[in-house]
Amino acid sequence: LTSGLEAAWSKLRGQEVLTKENIVEPMRDIRRALLEADVSLPVVRRFVQSVSDQAVGVGLIRGVRPDQQLVKIVHGELVKLMGGEVSELVFAKSGPTVILLAGLQGVGKTTVCAKLAFYLKKLGKSCMLVAGDVYRPAAIDQLVILGKQVDVPVYTAGTDVKPSEIAKQGLEKARKNNIDVVIVDTAGRLQIDKTMMDELKEVKQAINPTEVLLVVDAMTGQEAAALVTTFNLEVGITGAILTKLDGDSRGGAALSVKEVSGKPIKLVGRGERMEDLEPFYPERMAGRILGMGDVLSFVEKAQEVMRQEDAEELQKKIMSAKFDFNDFLKQTRAVARMGSMSRVIGMIPGMGKITPAQVREAEKSLKIMEAMIEAMTPEEREKPELLAESPVRRKRVAQDSGKTEQQVSQLVAQLFQMRVRMKNLMGVMDGGSIPALDN
Ligand code: GDP
Ligand code: MG
Image (cartoon, rainbow, N blue to C red; front, side, top):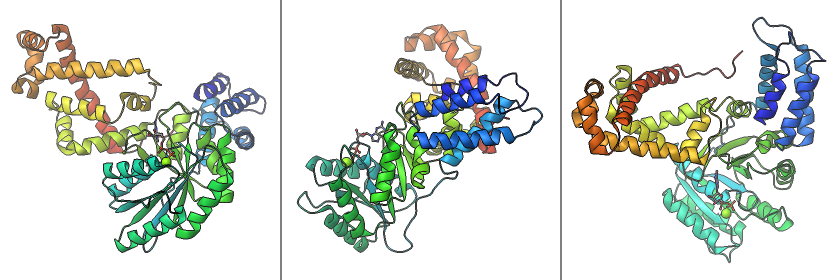
């Protein structure tokens, strides 16, 4: 999608203004790029029409190239298409909030149950999971294991009870225990079928959920539009959760959900770990589609990890340029923990996608760094200047860690570079806002 769109912009380089004539070709590229990204045809038609109308309407703005202007318009339309604002989960005014999860088999419903509980716990809500997938005993076991992992109770009633009955019993139990949020897992099928829909309707009727969230795999192609439409018409959904956004998804599903159902994507899953669930930010998604990198997500993740790592102290050190090898180690390990390196790097604009080989390379170099830092004396770790000034010390570190002197020198240089970079990054975090679009 991104490269398709880049072709569109490039055709406008050297032009003075956007005209009916000179946008014909770029619009064709945009149309093609969207279709290739599995956005459904009616959605693409409306999108292209709307962008064209606006593009021809805009006058000349000093200092803004026409291709940048078109990027801006497309960005705005993408954001609008995905619902504009962040859509928060709705909570019940009294009694437990009930969240019913629906979706095809294998899209990530059961995983989402636990991820969502983990997410809500961080917001201070107590949660309970209900095992409503009665077709496979393994599905119940899976939910129980995940529930343990996030330390949340799971209500099960075996496979002989009707899902609607299980849901009702679970809700009853949650009420008694003053649980804030009940999350109900359901069975999926490989394809939409009547039994699944009837069952969902029955469960919905039995527990009157606050939210009915359709879980959609981001890899779903053209069918996403029909899928969302059907679930919405048959069962009635309040929103969607897009999973597996960490994969090679082409993004079409993200662009179609709101347009075809009127219901927003509320959350996205970006990996298999419990912490890999985040609110859905249309603005960022649009930025990502346009290839601008998911800067905000990156910064937020970094902030979160830093918080755990005693951010304030670290920040003070960085600001006063005292950032030493102990912090360096903490920092690099924190980054490693943030998730796969690829994801973090993928979020940095201009870096694009990196290969698994590059990921392994990055992990290897982390190990090498660790070995060298471990070979330093506590004093050297705190005062990297000592190493910068003394080849003898560097030689000793090299020998003790089994690395070359050159590698040690590189590491020392890297630390000083990092001081500068960290300072810049902190500046960004303090400022809080990163302009969505350069114009
Ligand atoms: P269900 O059939 O809808 O309940 O799907 P599951 O929750 O059992 O998930 C199916 C598979 O997808 C499991 O292997 C999950 O680990 C995996 N999965 C779920 N969410 C994500 C995600 O956001 N990213 C990735 N990469 N894998 C996911
Ligand atoms: Mg399941």
